[in-house]
Image: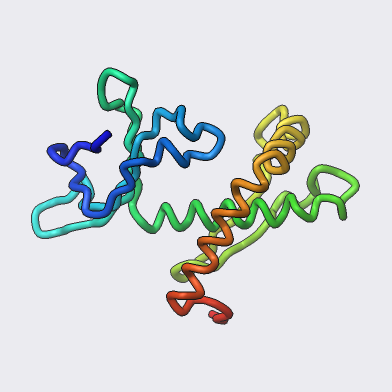
Length: 164
C-alpha cells in the first residue's frame, strides 16, 4: 500500500512495507508505513524534518497516524536503550526499583539532561514493572535484532566508541 504524498507531511524517504516487519504485528499491522519527510507543521521560511508512522484502518488513512520531529525519534530510542539496560540488570536488585531513588539514568543533552525515572505516580507501578519486564523478555529477540542493526549503522556513520 502506497503512503499518501498529498497530505501536509511530505514524505522524502519511505518504508511502504512496514506492516510486514512491525514486530509482533508483522503482516497484520495497522501501521502500514514509515516516512521521513517535511513536517506538516512547517511555517513559511522554516522547514523541519519529521518521522511519521502511517496507520490505515482498512478503509482509510487513520487520524492516529503519528508525526514526530527527528530528534524526538532519537530521544525515544535513547529512552528505550536506557530502560532496557536498567531492566536487564534487575537481577541485581531485591526490589523492582529503588523507591528512595527512582531515577534510572540522567543523560546529558543540549546543556541539560534528560532524567529517566520510574513513574512513581503510577499506583500499580510494581505490577506494571513486572508486566513490562515480561514483555521485554518476550520481545528480546525482536529488539535485539533492531538494536544490533542500529548499533552497526551508528558505527558505520562514525558514532561508534566516541566519548562526548
